[in-house]
Every structure is written in structure tokens, then in C-alpha cells.
Amino acid sequence: MPEAILTLNAGSSSIKFALFTFNHALSNIARGEIEGIGETPHFAIHGPHSELLLEKTWPHGETLSHEDLLSPVLEWVDHHLGDIKLAACGHRIVHGGDIFTAPTLLDDDALARLSTLDPLAPLHEPHNLAAVKAAMVLRPGLAQIGCFDTSFHKSMPAVATRFALPRNLRDQGVRRYGFHGLSYEYIAAQLRLAAPDIASGRVIAAHLGNGASACALRNGQSMDSSMGFTALDGLIMGTRTGALDPGVLLYLMQAHGMNADEITNIVYKKSGLLGISGISPDMRVLLASNAPEAAEAVESFTYAAAQHIAALVVPLGGLDGLVFTAGIGEHSPEIRAAICARLQWLGIAIDPLANAKNALVISKATSAVEIMVIPTNEEAMIARHCVTLLAQHAID
Ligand code: ADP
Image (cartoon, rainbow, N blue to C red; front, side, top):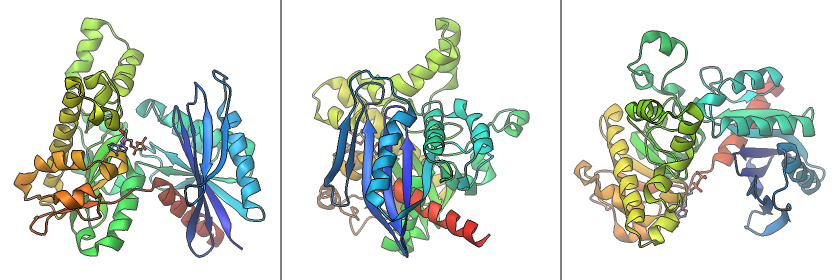
């Protein structure tokens, strides 16, 4: 008898979910998203062939809790599954800190410990945890499994995790962790299937979405990441700064009298592509715009991406493969070409025709580095972790 896994990825303005059945293999039977939380929440569920299965819009301005939002999702799931048992709800949780380095069954104690990490991921962690709490209330007894974006990076060597700060801060957990781990773990697995020779070598994966980072992989293991203590570091993102001289933060505090909340708002929500362009955090909008400010934002994005990719060649000592993934990485030939153009000195040569088609391999035969486009699937990775953890508990 097949069972099912529901995955939840809860953010500040949206909750993404996916439903999988598993017997011998996992099968994705539905995907959905609640968008516009805080404004006019709207939810839609699509089937495996993108067919619309259900749609609901709440009245504008209604204040809704995570329980209010998740309740119709879980009702639909129960109805849709019929006799199939929902075995677990798997949650994407951005920060596991030093405490949670593998997928974990969540209870009240685990939630209390995780909430101490809220300040390290203020844009994500509180929303991730609110969804877990809501699911616990709505479905008492259902296994809630936390899957952490930081866990995949536990293979990073100590030197990659170290800040040049006083040692006592390191002892208190002030170190580089790395994020987007569920995405990179999925990419590493897909790469093993699509190109095993490359997968066993030195690869940099670039996850270019609203959040953006790059990860150095050796034999499928994380060696370093452009993101550090928080998901602010590294590449320029939709609304986040990426790497920033810490002196800027001191200046904002001392010369502008800004407090932590004001600076948090600037560096997480008002910066990045939105900050530079003053137009939009959305790459599609910027690429379609004729405004010089939009072009500047795109230029800075590709410059920073190439810089961080180049820096990640150091821990690998060379490069065999470069993989693009996530919204921009999977769909924008223009951005991939601009980043690769800045990396030609590494022997990287992109094939314009394959790139225009978003093909799996987009490098020329003469390129020293295989360049690939691999769609990510964080939900599938969460579902795999849930199945593994449930099987382990069944054996224990
Ligand atoms: P998230 O990090 O929220 O999961 P996504 O991975 O969906 O985000 O990426 C969203 C980004 O991808 C947006 O900036 C969007 O404009 C960009 N994007 C999606 N499709 C394209 C496209 N065809 N060309 C350029 N950018 C795209």
C-alpha cells in the first residue's frame, strides 16, 4: 500500500508545497503554492501535468495565521489521497545551526532549540517554524520532519567555516555554515546520474533564484559555499546585498543612527537587484527593461556571480563542471552567457545554440569545463529525506 509525504516550504509571503506518494519509488502527484500572504492570499494546486486541481482566493487584507492558510491545504490533501496514508510532513528549514546537521523528527523541544536561530535567518526561519507549529496543531500525531539547508555543508573543511574573528565567537557558533543545501544535494544526485565522470570531480553549482549562491562540490560533497553565517553573504540576490563590507553596517549605525531592525530591512529586503535598479527584484523584469539602472543591476549580478564562482575554484584546485540551476540559472541564457564570458580565462567556452535552448550541456566540445543546466527540486530532496528517516525509525 503506497503512503504519502507532504513537503512544505514556508516563507514570509508564500508557502510552497508538494505531495508525493511512495511505494518503491517516489512519485510527485501534486504541487501548489499559497502566494500573496499578508495581502490577498491565493492558493493553487496543480497535478503532475501542470493541470489545475484547485484554486482559492481569500478576501483582500484578511489577517490569516499559518493554521488558517494550511488548513484547506491539508483538507485537500486528505481528500485527494483517499485511502493512501499521509506518513509525514517534511519541512524546508533554512538554518539548522550546529545543532541539527541531518533531517530530524521535530517535537516541541526541537522547535524551541531551532527558534534560537531566528536571528540568523530572520527572513526565513520564523516562517519555516510557524508552518511546523501549524501542521502539528492541525495534524497531531503526524510525523513532522525538518530538513535543513545548512546540513549538506557539514562536509565543508574547517578552514572554509572559519571567520577571522576572536576564537570565543567561533566557540559560540559564529562561523560559516552555507545554505541552499537541499538544492545542492539534489543537483549532486542528478549530476551523478547525468554525468558520473563530472560528478566525481570538481564542480561548482550556481543556484541563481531570488536567493542566489554557489557551492564548490568535490565528488558530490560540499567543500565551500558563497553563503556564510547567514543567507546574506556572497552573490547579489533579488533583495539581499550579498557580500558587503561590514564597515558599511557600522557606518549606517554610527553616522545614520540606524538600529538593527532598520539595517535588517535594508540588507535583506531593499538591496540586491531591487536596490541597485530601484525597479524590481525580478530578473525577468530587469532584462526586459530599457532603463540604465536595470542594466546596472544585471551587470552587478553577473559580475558578483562570476567573482564568487572564481573564488570557489580555490578549494577545488581546478574545475571540471559548472552547473546552473534555479529560476535564473535554469531559464536565462543571457545571464548564463554573461557569467561565462567573465570566466573565459578558466577555459570555459559556452555553446550559444545549446545555451539558447536551455540544453542539459551548454558548453562547446572544446571547453575545459563542462557547463550544464540542471533543474533543481528541493521538494523531491525533502521527500527523499523523509522516506529515509521513516524507514530508519521503522527499523529502530
Ligand atoms: P526562489 O528563490 O524564490 O525559489 P526562483 O528559483 O523561482 O526563486 O527564481 C526566481 C527568479 O528567476 C526571478 O528573478 C525570476 O525573474 C527569474 N526567472 C525565472 N524565469 C526567468 C527567465 N526566463 N529569464 C530570466 N529570469 C527568470
